[in-house]
Amino acid sequence: MSAKLHEKQQPADVVEAIVPMMPIVLPIVGGALIFLLAFIAVFMA
Image 1 (cartoon, helix red, strand yellow):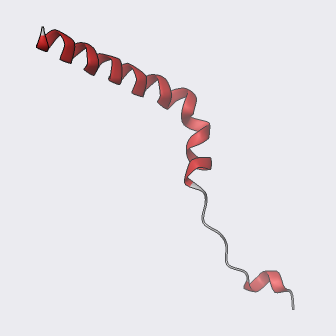
Image 2 (tube, rainbow, N blue to C red):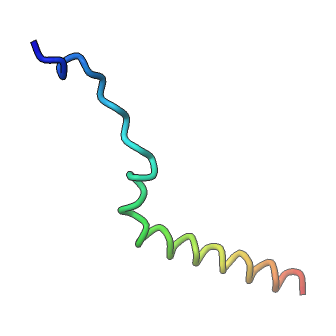
Image 3 (cartoon, rainbow, N blue to C red):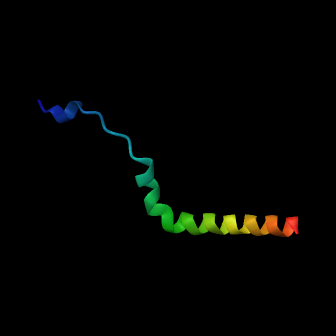
């Protein structure tokens, strides 16, 4: 009997799951942050 049959499968790492999506997520989040900062600047002026 093989010992690998009784090993538990480790859960996927959250960071490794997000890294392939960074070229899509980063510009969207950056754009939203810039929009919010500009909105706050105009509202406070």
